[in-house]
Image 1 (cartoon, helix red, strand yellow):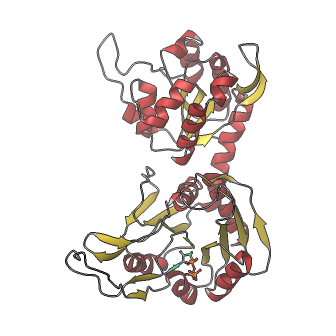
Image 2 (image 1 turned 90 degrees about the vertical axis):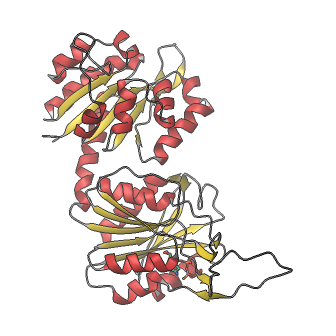
Image 3 (image 1 turned 90 degrees about the horizontal axis):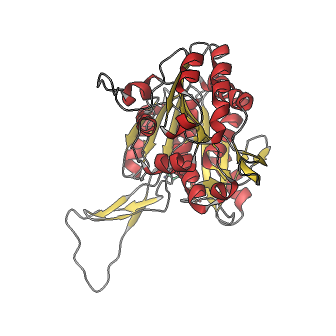
Length: 397
Ligand code: CTP
């Protein structure tokens, strides 16, 4: 049941728009409150009157009312929604969403939305397979949006291939599953660390690593989507987050990460350490910029192992997850860490796997557990991997 859920539907210019009134009707039957925002082009395929009749709400197209001049607030609509779905999502609108172009009410609603966003592409197969569309879809996935894959079949052009918008009944199922899944982590406090740490050599230089933070941010998004209250302690990364259920604490160094982790540890039920914490830090960072000289030596000292210290003080009921990035003897090294750091699970990344590890939008992992069982994933978008990791945690905690 979707009783009381606020669902905002965006309709763009595609022949598949004829299916969206059915989706509105199905959602209403499930008890959801539905509002519709359309692009001007979408009104050539399906009428606003049909949609306002089915949704029992005014349908918005323009940013303001042409008769009385009043403003239609994209911010208000974006914030009203518990879920925003763009169906059908044309190649043009996907490109706008992926690049922050806000030239109509639908795209401004997308930018203002604080809720999970789904998109169901519909277009001709060549458009769907064009590298630009693939890139835009990947960008949207990397922002934590959800793709409802188009189906393969006969297209309006008469061609046969991928590009048919998924059927409304299946879209309803995806939305219902999403809200049901949410219950899995309801009222759970989840602490996630992400990204690299930077260890100062002097005021302008540091020792860092290639971690992009994408895996940790995907875990934070997915945990919040499942109802968790998330604290994300993040090293310096280039990812924004737009979810009111995620509290982000920005840090720079391993020592700062340790301080914040120590503060947050007790109140969290699940702790996932994805951060690539520096193992060493300069022993005496220079207070002023070090001038160039013939040669120099940098003395490093070990940082505190945050995960190991958490393993030592872990209480009954807390679930502690570590990550391991290995290049050789992968499984046995990861199992040693699982044991030595008193973890409930370790997620092994191998730099040898294509499409896995630093900076990629996809990942392939092996989850290892103290009872020697393991789960191996395919190479999948990081958000999907995040979902599988959280499924494994929920099943075992
Ligand atoms: N980790 C940590 N604090 C550190 C170093 C690592 O909390 N100072 C955590 C990482 O967040 C990760 C796990 O430990 O979850 C594994 O990190 P890794 O560097 O691979 O393991 P180490 O135990 O440092 O071993 P090594 O570098 O020798 O592989």
